[in-house]
Length: 307
Image 1: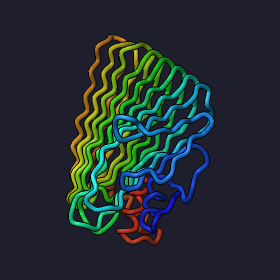
Image 2: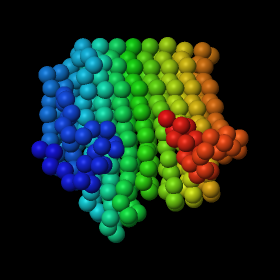
Image 3: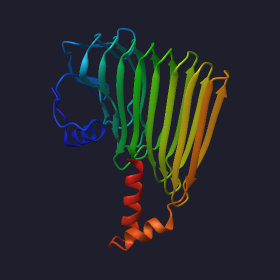
């Protein structure tokens, strides 16, 4: 179990922040195969029967437990589509750590398409962490995650969606449907360089009272990279929705923000904020007076912005 080479171990550390076998439930997938899987007393991890992927069931009232399900691709030209379904019992409070790392040193594209569906029970809470990372000298590191969240009454979901670096192309699709009194918070952190392309699409539907959503995206586009941010919040009940897109442009990078607010009820409160621009000159000057050169100052600002 966990027979990883140096490259695979480094990918795992970057996307899941672990070195070795974690406590609790887990599944480690490398080049299409599970190299280690474990269930716990309250979290059952089993393979899907009809498609490639996992069915993860979390018992009601499970508290302060975590499950790790990272994916690693180190084989050039390997492509996969994986379907993971999560059933989170009533009153549970859990953390799910996913993420995918790709190393490509060949001539063909390496692709991971991950489809994750969350069925969050009444009054349950889930925190989902997904990091994407690419390494290796070749282009063609492609990640297309799809996340669907279905929130029952009084439940709460927090999504941390982070693309660290090295991903050449990504289309990130997230959808959520909220029932009475439920909430979802989405934090996106995105960095692109070279000629990388990244599209983020968020659709949240609130059709029952006292629901709320908050979508926050922070991104940096450098070199000749291109980013597109699309958000659509539908408020068809007494609800609150907020979408915020903040982006820094460097070099010849470009960002297109396309927010949409669809209010279908008099008591729907929907807000969008967007800001796209370069690093302020006074920020760089201040850091340079502390002994940093311009490149170091820019790096410090970008790192702080994406935290």
